[in-house]
Amino acid sequence: MEDAVILLSGGMDSGVLLAWAKERYREIHALTFNYGSKHAGRETAMACRLAQHYGVTFFLAELPFVRELFRSSLLAGGPDVPDGPYQTDGISSTVVPFRNGIMLSVAVGYAETLGATRVLIASHTGDHPIYPDCTPDFTEAMSRAAFYGTFSGVRVEAPFSGYDKRRIAQTGRSLGFDFTMTWSCYRGGDLHCGTCPTCLERKEALGYNEGLDPTRYLA
Image (cartoon, rainbow, N blue to C red; front, side, top):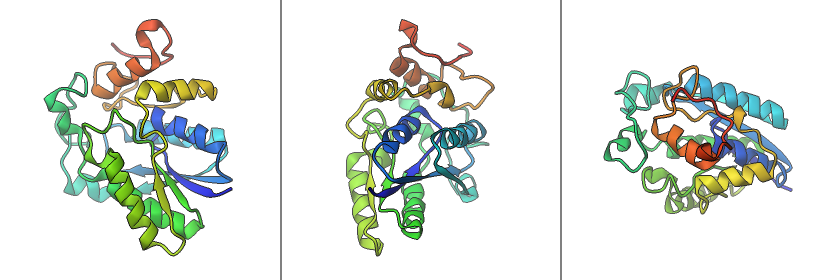
């Protein structure tokens, strides 16, 4: 079995990916990034909790330059995060330019250092229309660059690339995954706000209207 590095944000997608990967890789190294988002504290705490729960190594990498150089409503000090679903025009304000490209580049170098041959990211079909660095074409291009740019031929993979978020939720349930160990809300308050894009997407995926979502929301 191979070793893998996983981008573990602390959200439900990467959390389920961690549970999925535990059955398929010999050793997993969870890599979490603090790039100055408004919900960084919440996500990081959940990522650390997930890593401990699944018995994998955990490393928090600081990327302070992202907040200093880039503009996004997702970043602390940026504009307010809009309400409403991802389909609305205003949600493009949450894009952090080339975020996954930066994180994957670091993760590939980390994998090469550790002797791991795979880097895993939890991109899915719901991300594709909004975030250009979540598409299958992007992941494939990054994988080619990683393979040719490392001695060990590291590959980047997005196992959930063909899944929507509801299917990820179903996968998690089949694995006995505890969704209360994850954080989605872009606003990073004491509870999930329930109205920002990721909260609405989380509600839909976890079956909020069917009484299946264990998350506590403000609204």
